[in-house]
Each structure stands twice: as C-alpha cells, then as structure tokens.
View 1: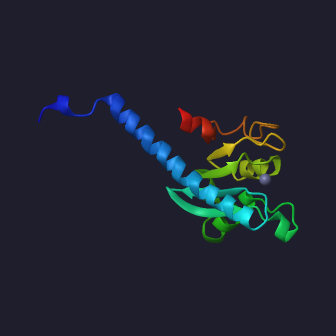
View 2: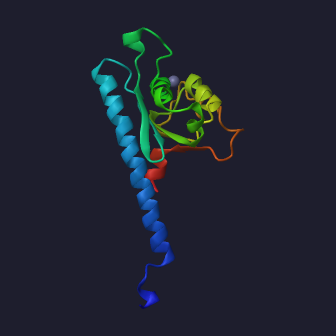
View 3: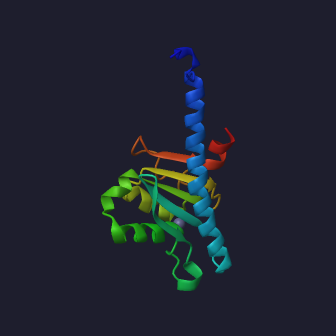
Length: 155
Ligand SMILES: [Zn+2]
C-alpha cells in the first residue's frame, strides 16, 4: 500500500473539526427545539440539553410563566431531569448546550455542579453569567470551555 495516498494530517484535522462542528450543531439544534417548544407554550424561548458521552441525558425549557416560579429556568429543569437517573458526579463530564448564555443564577449553579463545558447560541446582554455581565466561571476549572457557538460555527 502506498502511504502517500493516505489523507494528510491537515485534511484529517479538518475532517475531525467538521465532525466536532456537526456534533455541536446537532446538540444545539436539540436545544433550539426545546426553545421553540417553550415559545409555543408562552414561555421565554430558552431551551437546553445536557450531553454526557455523546448522549442527551437531560433537557429543559423555560417554565417560569406556567409555574409562576422565577427559578424554573431551562438549565435547572435539565439538571433536575439528569439527576433523576444519574449521579451528580457525571456533571463534571457533561456539556451543556443552551440557546442563550446562562443567566447569573444558572451560571452559579452550573459552577457549583462543576459542569464541564457550556456552549451557548447567543450572549445574554442583560443577565449573562458566563461573560456578558459577570464571569462566574472564569477563575476555576481551566478545562472548562465557554464557547459562543455562533463564533465557533463561523470559523
Ligand atoms: Zn437562568
């Protein structure tokens, strides 16, 4: 076999990056679907999914209007769902895909659970807790990735 016919390293890297990007796009689409459901139900259209080992292990959408409870944000609902079937410790190896940057309250909870990565669709200029208003994650867990997915996907 002629080794020169194998893919060169940059092609392999590019294809891995595309795989990574399509993985992000797939999970973000699921988060967007949850956001659409929230909108249909008269809620602020925010949705999210929690991904562990490439599988969705929790999903949530805002539920503050129906429940009349200001803490019922999509992230809290997804975490609650995850904890029904998984130990808290898996959050350290779990990624969050959320349509909007988590608010200060959720960012603080995500920090306490030591979630691995947060991917968000757009910034939250009023309440953002992962960079826009406060940076609740910046000084801990160097492995934590906070990535604005829009930016990532345009690369
Ligand atoms: Zn929140």
